[in-house]
Amino acid sequence: MITFFADVCSYGGNFLISWCVDLLPTIFMVLILTNTLIRLIPTHLIEKAAALASRHLLLKYMLIPFFGALLLCNPSALTLGRFLSEKDKPSYFACASYFCHTSSGIFPHINSSELFIWLGIAHGVEMLGYSVYPLAVRYLIAGLFANFLCGIVTDYTTAYYSQKMQLILPDTPDFQEDSATAPTKGTLASDAPWHEIRIVAGRSGYGGPLVVKPDDTRNKLIYITSGGVRPDIVDKIASLTGCICVNGFTSTVPDNEVFLAVIDCGGTLRCGIYPKKHIPTVNLLPTGKSGPLARYITEELYVSDVTAECITSTEGQKAVSKAPIKGVSARLARLFNYPLSGIGKYCGLFYKASQDSVQMMLHTLLPLMGFVSLLTAIVECSGLNAWIAKSLTPLSSNILGLLILGVLISFPFLSPVLAPGAIIAQVIGTIIGTQIGNGVIAVSLALPALFAINTQAACDFIPVGLGLAQAKENTIKVGVPSVLTSRFLTSALRILIAWLFSFGW
Image (cartoon, rainbow, N blue to C red; front, side, top):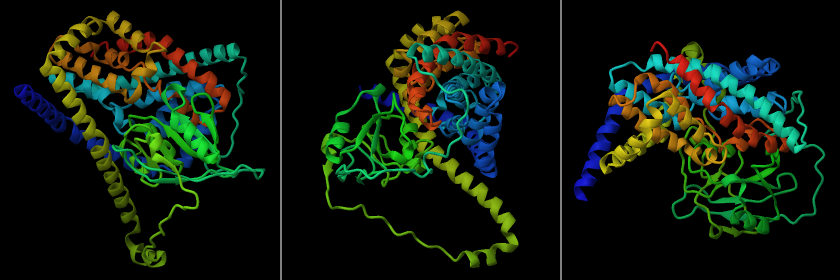
């Protein structure tokens, strides 16, 4: 046992070092450059361009999601769907969520928390002495066509489920104010006795305590948990506060009506979405401050590992807010910085981009590298690698097997289970990458393998993604089965497109 433990630590450490030496410096430089470029382009210009292009099929299912993913990253790219009609929002989500993966070879900043889907395969290619950049370019170009196809197919599945459920989705864009900032109009005072509660973190949790209380405007609790299953703490919060509970998997609520969000995210992406909107968030799982939205996951807005025992009534107690710290006078700052304001501005952009990149490396990439390295070491040293490789090799050593693998992973009832954190895809990608590096699987199958192992992308994220696009309740009801079905129907076609783009490499 001691020998096995030592072998695992040694193998995992060497595996981690190889990744840090070969890949991490390049990824770091790309992150700094892209984060700087993103800061130079105002978000309102991106949104204006998206609104103008929303009427054209090629633009809304290819160019808008691609540039949205490049400039806004995951999951903010999904918010551009609000410029589309309700009928088009499921299709936009279907293709935009894929763009956050297929572009990661060239632009790793887009979806850093799930970057190892790409890195696992890329590492195997590098083991053979090949450059990964041609593979990354083909991954990007093949994704443009495959993801566009996914958007078109989702149009048909949306129409099918809309007719089957007898829910007519509007086909014209409704440009409304952002629900997170739009004022509530015509709100009537309620006689409901709202009550205040205190929520603390569990034994392994992070954040809090949160002191929250609904009011006449913000009186909704939205829960997005385990496919829509209502957890016990939702009932307890409702009984203590008098709030209205809404299932986020089947309905949507304007952000300005939500006083609390309940999630069960073991990854990192969903954890920061509602804190970013300044909505207090309760996580049933012990997930801490990490991921692409880590800067929004603060103790004032987020608490994790919450159970029913962590929730108590605190009538009469008020949350204490910290007074803002005032800095140097703006007039004096302009006086001293005026001669070098231009240089200072752009140096500051690079510096802030470097800070963001370091934070992403420390809080997202390095923990994932450590996790994947340790898991790979356990699989390798225990002999499971040989068994798994033996099981996967028949499916991944030829294009027919990859087609079968992709179809199985994208099965509608299975894909939401495999999707969270993309852990399954990342582990399989690492194992297949190792087999490519050992010469068991042909390197020409690296590109279709990337598409095969990731056909379940974002299947657990559909209601939240549609919510980011400000989809209405009927759109979410139709959109969830529509996207799951289109994933299944397009899985084989996407792999075939990738296989065609792998010719000549």
